[in-house]
Length: 419
Ligand code: F0G
Image (cartoon, rainbow, N blue to C red):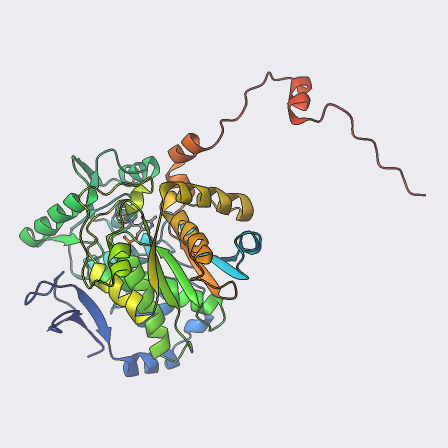
């Protein structure tokens, strides 16, 4: 058997073609397991290294049997930007930003959805559903449109960035705004998908989505020419992505494609930080927050579903978790834009804010090769910029006053011609 599903708590195994989201025996999370011997052979025989950087470059490590059914919008292959100016400012020598805003719908969710929606097609499902703080909804709606499936998304009313809402609407999803938060929306879709077996759930509880998202780690290793970074810093909301990225690095390590593993560092907004709190207290469980609040609406989550996987990733990698304030997030967003030309949404900037804090605390060393994951594009949430940046001046359409405003009224002396 190349792959199967396994419960992370009791170890119960399930066939990979079963439609199941959590363990029937103990209710815990499932993960996809592979026989690495078989994967090693498959990789040896394939030309994966010649394929362009993308999720499907790693098709042999993905849980898809029939490659002709793949639903793709060209996801992955995002830039790993070396940030020399920002690195210098923060005091870290090798800083990289993995810019997931370069994905088709502008976030890392596309990596998961290309696999998840392909599975929906394999399972012959007609309807897909998710709860979302915005990006999952936008991504699922796009991939469902590409595959010709109906899409339902539940979002917290008034608490998602406008760009994301616009995306879900234009791709034709049935958008339901609930009078509640993300955690409540998630509870509803979990129940709904158990009751209506023809509705396929594509939140990150679906173990196949995580498989697509692990390609983010594969790409980083390939972009660093076969090395893993020392530190991997990523924003944490529902905690699927940090788990996925750790799985990706672990796969590459098991397959002897990298020689070391990074420390995984999860960053949460101060007002929505149950995982960081558990790590700080050395606890093996989280205390959900009933009223999560942060300007970074993407990670405004009080009861992260994949907390157990996230804590495992942090502990196994000898990493950590930290919190950042809304102000630190907004400052980091501007720093990244103004020093590196990268415009990311607030949740994404929390990884930069977290790095800044950890450098101050001496928990990241200036010599560490550090990768911050920028999870989503800044244009998703232009409102926040309108609120935090100074409004541009309005001037008469005449050159005089414009020159005066720009401080260019006095003509600059012509450069003497050299004979
Ligand atoms: N960054 C962004 C931009 C996100 O949209 C999310 C999650 C995260 C980070 C956190 O990732 O949940 O895997 O820990 N957004 C989800 C959504 C919850 O519905 O779009 P996570």
